[in-house]
Image 1 (cartoon, rainbow, N blue to C red):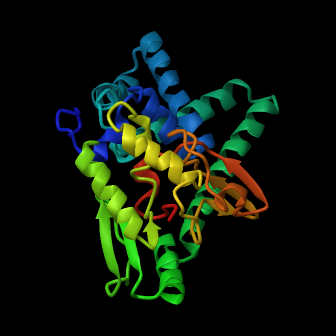
Image 2 (cartoon, one colour):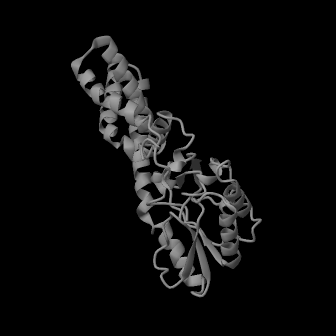
Image 3 (cartoon, rainbow, N blue to C red):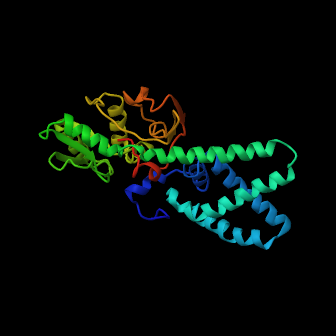
Length: 296
């Protein structure tokens, strides 16, 4: 699975993603936050430079774990964010050591104390903002509650296969669109029939629409389906959604689920602001969002 030898639906998201840089960017932006993330990777480069120059055994010992692991795991096809977790404590040590070294070298100047303060404050604020993801019910629970309050149980719901289902909808009629299956005339006919009979489409997350449109040669019909659906040309309109982002003191850090697959942002999401000030962090790895704070 890690090497991509098995053609699994949930690893197709990593097709055409750059080795190594993908991990650096995702861990630095979302896993550790931008301040701690930048410091951690800079600390690794600093430790390599110091080890080459001074050949200290302590540096070589840390690098003997970090470098081979990153070279082996960072170059694989599948790049779940959690694959970098074994490196985080060591990157933290290296980043902290870089800060201490820089402060010792520039002890009489205000620059390094200011940089240290920014890194510590920014990391702490991001941690608090991250915890705030869980200050409200899970987005899937929110949408499920909306359905129970507004949709009769006689309605036909359609979800995507290889995707989670919304909780507490056991008495609703639900079918699945086989979107990960190869695009064939039979699949197209089945989708058309299901959509013509559906009252509501339910997206638990961006799991499928973030991947399939990025593979248009493999999924030409399914890619066109998403383009038409999200642009409002298939007869469906968005009636409810729920999100939860890292947020603190009126500032939210949002992940962009539409730009990377090249899809139009459906209304009313296009004009939605979860807080007065919004920072767009760009694309977030699927495993960072789809389990605990998906866009439903």
